[in-house]
Structure formats: structure tokens, C-alpha cells
Length: 299
Image (cartoon, rainbow, N blue to C red):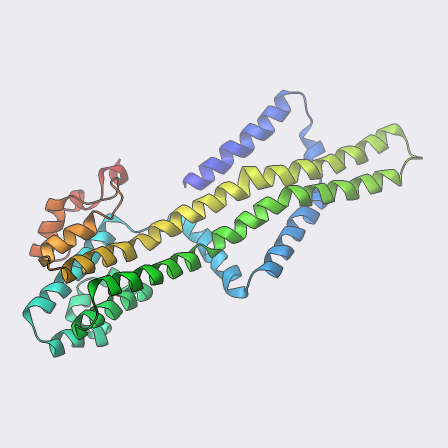
């Protein structure tokens, strides 16, 4: 919703200001200039990126528009799942714990937290490192280094659409100049025409420069930043898992280890310590609904 509001304000201020200055909006309606600029931008975007990144950019765009980021309920489910796993690690044998991580879909623990179970990438991340903990041969600093490398790889992959769109945004002003040059070439071929017609051709050429700069700095670059913010929030659960499991490996009780993970949530999205404690002790979904979402989300 915020993206649409921002676009409406941006375009409204642009067109409204131009009209208020006495400009004629019809002059800006140069569809072929936009075809040249946008078509070239799309073509170079596809040429520069693997198909996987192209497809992921479409997904990232949808996620940014719909603000598909982890909710307070998701964070509580994640912390609850980690707490339950750590209790199993402390109180039961290796074979019983391995049953949960070898087949998460059949695990009674993960079934209680469907949002975690549905996140296949994060689920594999959790199971892989719980398995390493069970093996008991790796040192904490070795696990931490391995986690850091994997999280770095995950974040880099998730931010590929952002970097791809930044490159497009940086190229758009130059593509606008290309469109303008083509318009000038067209105008030069009509020097024998009336000044009115020639002025129209030159005006159309200048629209190309305007469109390239506006699309770059007014739309594509800000939206790329929106994608970056969305994807970074979607990567935050990996940091929570890392800090929670490392605290547990260093000897913290499950409830204390969960607190280490809770602190990795942004302050305006972080559930209170009482809510997390009630959730992990009483069971998933038992925390009062009004307390699950942070104040900023409920406002």
C-alpha cells in the first residue's frame, strides 16, 4: 500500500507542478520515447542477469508491493520452535531428536509451528545446524563461522534482484539520452518543415531525457530500495536462529537462548519478553493476539 501511495504522490506532484507552470500534459505523451527507454532497459536487464535472477526479481517485486515480511506471529512461531528443539536436545536422546530433523514434515514439534514448517529454506538451515549440534564434534566458534558464511551467501542471493534493479536505475538516464538523440536525429531530418512541426520534434526528443532521469531517480531506484528493505527483513530469521543456537551451544538454558534470538528482532517489531515466555511455556498460539503484533504494526 505504501508503494502505491508513494507513486501516486510522486507522479501527482510531477504532473501537477508541470501543469501549474503552464505546461501542456499532452506534450509529455510521447509513447515511442518510452518504448525506446523501457524496452532497452528491459532488454539489457535480461541480458545482464541469469534467468533465475530475472524470475526472482518478479517475486521480489510482488513481495515489496505486498510488504511480505515476517510478522510478529511468525517470530513467535520461530522462537517457539527453537525453544522446543532445544528442550528436546537437553532432555532426550540423540535418536529422538534426529527424528525431528530428519523428517520435519512428520515432526510433532514443527507441526505446531506451520509458518516455520512452510519456510523450506529456513527449515533446512535449522535442521542442518541442529544436526551438527547433535553430532557434538564441532566447536562453537567453528559453527558460528560456518553460519556466518552461509548467511552471507543467502543474503547475497536474496539481494540479487536489488542489485540488478540498481544497475537498471543507473542506466536509465543514459538510455533517456539515447532516446533524446534519436529524437534529435528525427528532428534534423525535418529541418525543411515548419518551425511549429520542428519544435514538436525537438520537444519530443527532450521528453526522452526527462523520462530517463525521472524513471531512474523517481521510480526504479526508490523501488529497488524497497526490495532491499523487504528482502533484508526476510533474511532476519536466519540471524535469530544463529544467535539462539549459539547461545544454547555456549551453555544457556533454552529460555535464555531464545532471549538471545529475540534481541535480534528490530525493536519496532520485537515481541515483549513476557509474550515470548508465555508463548514458549503455554504453547503456540496461546499468547494474547493483541500482544503478538508489535505496537508499530497495530497503530
